[in-house]
Amino acid sequence: MGQADMSTRFFETQSAEETRRLGALLSAELGSGDVLLLSGELGSGKTCFCTGLAGGLGSSMEVSSPTFTLINEYRGGRLPMFHVDLYRLKAGPQVLDLGLEEYFEGPGVSVVEWPERLGQLKPPQAWEIAFRHGGGDLRLVEVRKP
Image 1 (cartoon, helix red, strand yellow):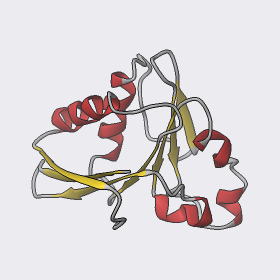
Image 2 (cartoon, rainbow, N blue to C red):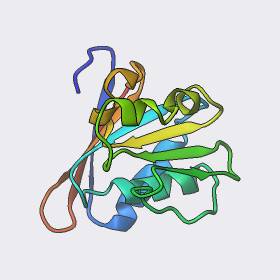
Image 3 (cartoon, rainbow, N blue to C red):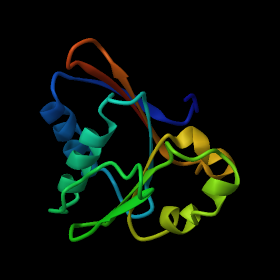
Image 4 (cartoon, rainbow, N blue to C red):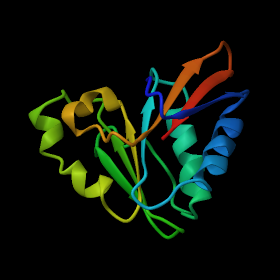
C-alpha cells in the first residue's frame, strides 16, 4: 500500500466487538461504488470488520465469510454490501470470470478479502485496509482512503 494521494489512519482494537465497531464507524464515510480491499492473515479481524460495516450500512443480515460461496450480498440498508473472498482462488482466469467489475461499478459497497488475487482488476481508487495481529486480541488496522 503506498499511493501518495491517499490519507492514512491507524486504529487499534482490543476485541472482536471493537473491530466490529470500527467497521460500523467507517461505514458512515462510504458511498455507492466504493471498494474496500482488506488484507491480513487468517483470523486478523477482516470478517468481524465486515460484520460492523454491514450493520453500519443498515443490513440486519448475519455476516459470514464467503470463502466457499465467493460473494455474499447484504441488502436492506442505506447501501448494499458485496463481500468477496478470493482466498480459494488463484489470480487470473478464476478471478476474471467472477464479473467483479459489475459489483465495483454497481450501486453499493464492495469489500474484497485477499485483494492481491485481483491482479489487473484492482480498482485504482479503492480503500486499502490492512489488518495485523498485535498479540492476544489486539488488532492493528491501517486504513488508506483515496
